[in-house]
Amino acid sequence: MMREEMTPQRVWQEFTRAQNFNNAIELYETVEQNEDFYIGNQWRGVNAPNLDHPVMNMLCRVVKFFISSVMSDDIGISVTDFDESSAMKPVLDMLGVQFDQIMEGCGFKRKAREVIRNSAVDGDGCMHFYFDPEDDMQGAAGTAEAFRLTPTPGHIEAEIIENTNVHFGNPQSGDVQRQPYILLNFRRLVEEVRRTARENGGDADAIQPDEDTYKHGDAPEEGKVTVVRRYWKEKGRNGRKTVWFCEMTAGAVVRGPTDTGYSRYPIAFMPWEKVKNQYHGQAAITGMIPNQIFVNKLFAMAMQHVKQLAFPKVIYNRNLMAGRKWNNRVGEAIGVNGDPNVAVATGFRAPDMSAQVLVMIDKVIEYTRDTMGASDAALGNVTPDNTSAIIAVQKATSMPLELQRQDFYCFVEDSVRIWMDMMAQNYGVRMVRMKAPEAEADAVPALPDSMGAGMLPQAAGGAPGMAGAMLQQAAPGTASGIPVLRSKMEGDLSPAREDAYETAPFNFLQLKGMNLRLNVEVGAATYWSELMQVQTLDNLFAKGVLSDAVTYLENMPRGYIPGRQELIDALKKRQQEMEAAQMAAAQAAGAPTAGSGVTLG
Image 1 (cartoon, rainbow, N blue to C red):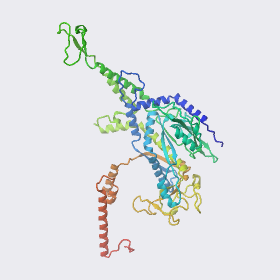
Image 2 (image 1 turned 180 degrees about the horizontal axis):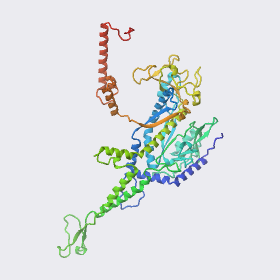
Image 3 (image 1 turned 60 degrees about the vertical axis):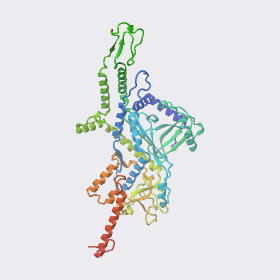
Image 4 (image 1 turned 30 degrees about the horizontal axis):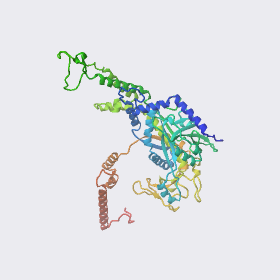
């Protein structure tokens, strides 16, 4: 199949068309206004020099409540096989560990909070994943020396993309993976882009700085250029579609068309509230901005009234002042014409401001919060007289956010499937820890050749399509002469134990095609905390599940028990003395000792 020709002119025409669509739905103006109102810059552009600019920012607190509610629990990922094959369990357990490493390495949880924030404020949240090959892999390389292999370097990274910088080829559809193409635009330093172009055979001399037409704010920007990355899918000779990408500026090629080998676009997208016939969503605060403006204006006018009319004014007879002006200085004598007993001045107090003003402000704030799903009970603005009723109201109030929570779980699931796709293409052969089965013959699950098992590297005398995780002729053991590298999870590990783990090479190319065979479930998990660990240890020790005091102290977090190590050493010494005394007593009584070869019976 002939590959599509990509030129800067074609990509820039598509980019301009996407910007025109965003202008048609007023996306840039909406996002800029929403961002200003969220951060409290709510009087921007208002020409009222004689009026105070109070900000009663009710929107910011509601959005933070939304973020906290959606991310109230940690993220838990469960990967299962639709076939429920027990042989696949070691591989699935290993994948769970890899996903945890990716989430920790790229800061996924922290960035996911920003995605939810962008979704609630701007309408959409987007995360872009890419593979960074610049990774020394020192730890893995040291372990791999025993297996005579060089691990593939690199790791998966994630970056936040603003919704104004992501453009779908079919803007009427919100399905990411069915898009004909996706554009991402970035503002980067010119020298950085030129260096990238030289490294990838692009036209570095044609790259010149430009202006960002739709930048947010008035901050100056120099020495930058807009780079558009285009993703699209093409069929290869084997009939399988893969994702390609290129990078262009307005008049130069930064990176030419490159086959990533992925089957999925490396982009996860989450709209807050879906809108018909467009991929951009509706933000949580867009419809409530007029309410915020009304509250701010009413409060500003109330403040102005208080400043001008709250204090009594002095009214005096100018004809009796003998051409002098009224003086408010304390103790100052005031000269008048005529009889000083005649009233020269009197006090005047304007009518009080109507109480309806403050009542209206309170009602607008209350109704706005209620309609957004953040009542006073949910925000904690109530007196805890009836705790059961308050908890019931909080649960009922948070129910509408369950839809956004499920959308976020779908966002995480899309991310996990993207990671698996990238791992299969970019990870190559790496050292992993997998549970060692009892029988060596069942050491690894057999993956069909259709999933890429047949693409495993061969060793001398080996055959392709080796089952599961370990390379043929490179599996550790006495037969191959390669040492078995083990790490202790708990207690003494041996091949016959179910909690034994072995470190061995795994060819991630075998994951090709596994996305359709795996069920990925995302849900709430428990946050780790030292206090929770201490409480769990106390419960286990109190119930007799954990009877060894040394194990109890060793698992206690640092800082909770002063002199913990001294206690552990003293307990171990006492245990050794007791064992020695028991052994001496047994020998004196003529009883057989453990390991003496005498069978008791």
